[in-house]
Image 1: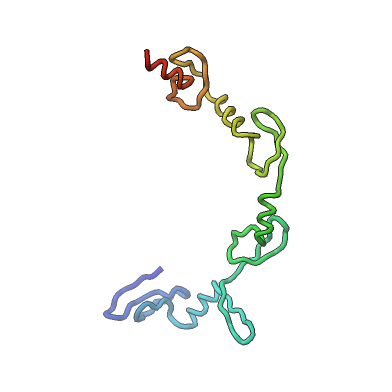
Image 2 (image 1 turned 60 degrees about the vertical axis):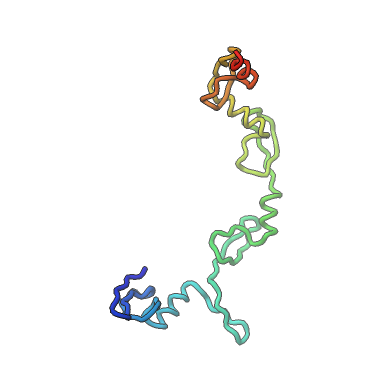
Length: 162
């Protein structure tokens, strides 16, 4: 965060590293070269390769969710050490579960699934909705839509013709 006060061409700023007030020209963010070096050393590391020095972003040590090996990454959010581990974890896992609606056993790749098929899922949601009576034929039906008044399209078209 900068706090700047214009004094002709010179500007008073606060150093991003140490917080000292400094009068500087231009777009300088630090009070000295040492402060600047110290600030960037927190975020970057210098790696020596032979006679050359390369500046690299600092990396974090993470543990792979699939194989348990420790690996380095530029982010703390990484879960897998390699694409191979990610693929094995996501596509090779299979869990045996029981359907909430029809109670059949099924195999799935997801821990979050509750139903064996989409038809069981939709039947489950329909069964939870309150029973309504069709305006056209008088039969009982279930629908999650609160504004629906007919059990089917045929009943709707019959009611419209009358």
